[in-house]
Length: 237
Ligand code: BEZ
Image 1 (cartoon, rainbow, N blue to C red):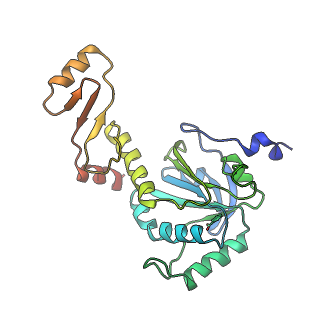
Image 2 (image 1 turned 90 degrees about the vertical axis):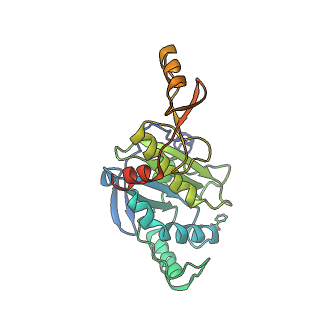
Image 3 (image 1 turned 45 degrees about the vertical axis):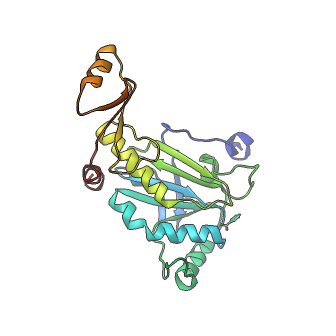
């Protein structure tokens, strides 16, 4: 009953929420989410449909980068509102027939959820009816090892994602946790990081006088964080 109400269609999990739970059939067997991923970061993402060109370019790119995400303790899980056999046929086609930007013979080894009843898509706000009422938008949920949603990005149907940015987000979230810092605009490993706002006049004064900290003013302080330290922390977690 509740499954079909507009409220359910437009329910949107938020940053800081526990990832909504579900059990689903995928191209790699049944998964219990997020339970099966406890202890790992996971990117849960949706795409509009199988056998479509933008989605094909995205899957080839993500599959090619899967090892790089795995080294950052991050697993990938895809979803579209298509059935299991469509998923299998599409992924076989990609491997056997599609060559794109130097990628060929690409095998998609991460699970792709069949969601023909839109059960998962509705739980995660992946259906945005004014964009399309039967296809998922390109949603990306970054979920931490405790099953908490830490970042969300949505793209419309026509816009393919930037997978280097998705990787940057995974690294930045882990670096922020590990070193208790924030990351400024366009941050990449090796760039200076931001120290959280001073909570007292004493802290503000100390920071202005600390030679290891570069304060543009008392509220805007950065410090060095080596690229190696970031990758050591993230890749050995
Ligand atoms: C695509 O993946 O190519 C696509 C899917 C739905 C609408 C537009 C493009």
